[in-house]
Image (cartoon, rainbow, N blue to C red; front, side):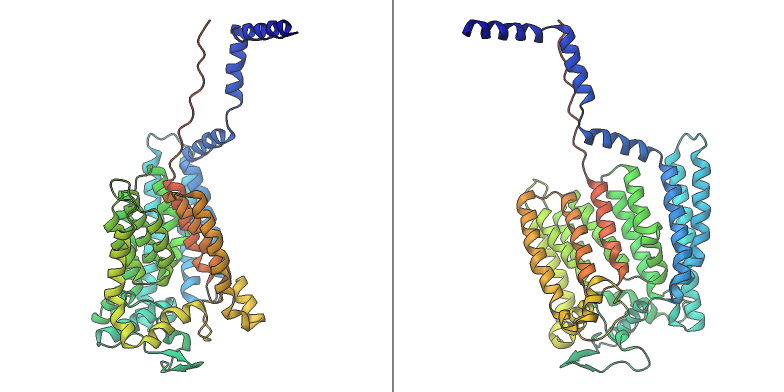
Length: 458
């Protein structure tokens, strides 16, 4: 029996040396490549058809613009929708036509089309709405935060605290007369008022120092710097720019006065600094964003988990020190001067636990639940943070050390959950998880494809 098995094994080994069988094995490796490799190849083919994908994106943007203009009740937003639909539709049609023509450099064509969209869907509405607001003295031509930021800048210039209105013992104290109560609050850190200072200093600027023009200018400059420094293929950087600035995920907010745009641009620049392992620059950039708005704080925590120095060592102390210094220097004087008002404006009001209704309360799950059962207002967010913190800790432990793109994907999912659970948040905050997801895609380093097995000829 032993010799029979040994003889069978010998014949099996001889078969393995047969050239035909080796060729069959080689063919099997060719046919059984991992599915991820095939998906990657298909993605590369699709991204190679950039003009076609641009035509689809701009076409969808045109459809969104007209539907949005017909359904929103805010003048600044429907004005943008009607003005943006024509540029989006024209560039979509132009991209589709050009995609069918032979061109030596399609990427330059895509860049040219991007500038057309920037001019038509961002700059033109931005300047026109700012001018109309100046001529008509009508704040309806801008989102409410534009006026809030400009009023806070006026108070800062006069040497006063921007946190004039606050809530104590369930009562609103010192609300500004003539405007809705929610516009009396300043739900930002003090540094945000810097965007309103040009408007305060130059009253006869014909609307050119409107706070949203200042915010949009800063956003465009920071984004251009980040995209120039980003280590990613040009096609991916263009897609990042489209989502951040050109599509409705950015253009709508740039034109109407979305205060989140400079925050997101600062975070993108910080991501690029992390990619380049410039820890101190990362910390300073994050500190500036965190010294403006609370929405930058989760990103700051994520950055400390993944920041590395030039030698690949953890650089979280550099990021923590630099960002803490920026926030401390700009916020501490105001927090010490009026701690109750500071907490009421910066934390309680934007989190929806101050008891003051806000237009930011979109019909998302958290808002709907607290409308039905008001007692949940003080329960939902703590529960989300506890449960989310547990799963976050598990994810970090399982994926440690975290890569930059993994951190961005985690922030994308986490911010989406918090937006849905918050009791007073607007659906516009969806731009945060969208941008995080796109940045993660752009910065992801593709794993090298394993070489095909090479079998020696007989």
